[in-house]
Image (cartoon, rainbow, N blue to C red):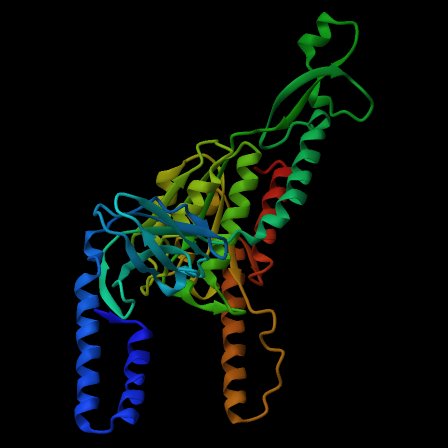
Amino acid sequence: MHLTGRAPLLALCGLVAVVLRPGPGTAWAWVLLVVLLVALDVLLAPSPRSLELARAAVPPAREGASSESTLLVRNPGRRTLRGALRDAWQPSAGATGNRHRLRLPGGEQARLTTPLRPTRRGRLRADKVTVRSRGPLGLAGRQTSLEVPGELRVAPPFESRKHLPSRLAVLREMDGRTAVRVRGQGTEFDSLREYVRGDDWRSIDWRATARSRQTVVRTWQPERDRRVVLLMDTSRTAAARVADVPRLDAAMEAVQLLTTLAARAGDVVDVLAGDVALRLQLSSGGRHGVLPDLQTALGDLEPVFVEADWRMLAGAVRAVTAQRSLLVVLTSLDAAVGEHGLLPHLPALARRHEVLVASTTDPDDGGEVPQDVAGAYAAAGRAGGRERRRRAAEALTASGVEVLETSPADLPTGVADHYLRLKAAGRL
């Protein structure tokens, strides 16, 4: 049961009766009248439980983008139901305008749409749908809450998409230079042409030259269908916020940009994520349109507060491919060293693959001058962290691994540019 604003107004009108005829009997009579009218209104109100509710599939969305939830409401009875409906969601779903007025004649149905603007990625679920039906007097009515399951899958934002056109332009420029490339690691035969001064003599095709009156050379172009493996650390270090951005979210931006870029280049991309268990394994299979599947899978990833099992993760990389690949490990440099860290497993991977360890760092770290004792301790802690990361980077470099440590905003472009440099040098 619920009361409308008319019920207290009707009760206040009893003051007039008390003024005209003072006495406790008048007051109690008026209260009894109000109670009887409210009870009558509740009895005459249609039951909201008789409504048939169904929710249409909620379109997935990226974090910060718009979606909507649509409820189909049908009144199977004969009486018109007047009232209101509230479609409740988790607060992070960003439901606005979710209170709808109802006037539904018997046998008819209505579509009620609730706009959603999620502020958190993952699976966001609908709460209960609350329906109120008003009685004919408008004093009170019935209320019930019904379970109408609904789920909104929210993918991480792809803010680094703005950098994609410039990197695709570099790829197209590289493709335009393939006709004059010479033989090198990671190249394949393209065509034959006449020799010109400056060509490498090792590119001369002697058989074709013997059949022709001119010296003929082979031209080469970078191989396509190469492999790129992206390994994301989802252990406890992934939950740390660097420059107010969770490390895992920064890694997701880098993964989305590089996956899209490499897929457009015709390379096969494998995305792995894990800690003590493998949480995600996705392969592009050479498809250009892998981004929607990747975003859906990334939306379910959350940091797990355990230490990463790098032995297992390194084994997962070896199980994915034995082909020489670019392996990008997105983790924290703090987690890379130590007996159970990444470093003991890297030499074997570096002999087989081009390995890049990418980590985020706060660009303002160390810029403040301590003003008090607490600030001095904090500054000393940051200095110790910088020293540990420096040693980790030196150890990784000594094992044949390249290290990229940059701000969360620059991590996606840094990883993408590294891929393009390897591609241009014929190392991939």
